[in-house]
Image (cartoon, rainbow, N blue to C red; front, side):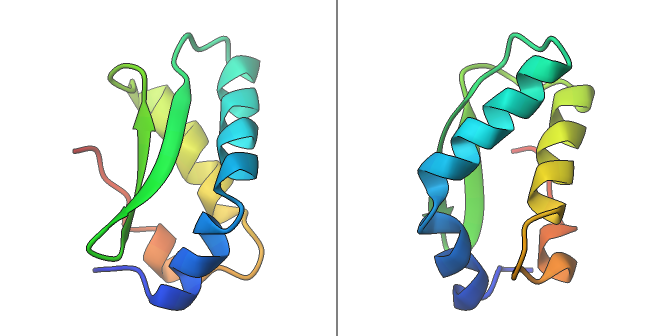
Length: 82
């Protein structure tokens, strides 16, 4: 399910802040993976990393996205690796 434009606008406007926070969260679990940037693909939000994310790293990113204020959580719950 594509994410609505309201959600994408709320996330993309602060994308640099979100990337920094995701990287802090990944560092807390001693991950050597870093998020590089957030971009849109057909209204989906894509978070790119410097290498393939392991399951634990994906959970950290999902948890961060689910905890964002003013974002429709139903849309964020449909995360996936691609």
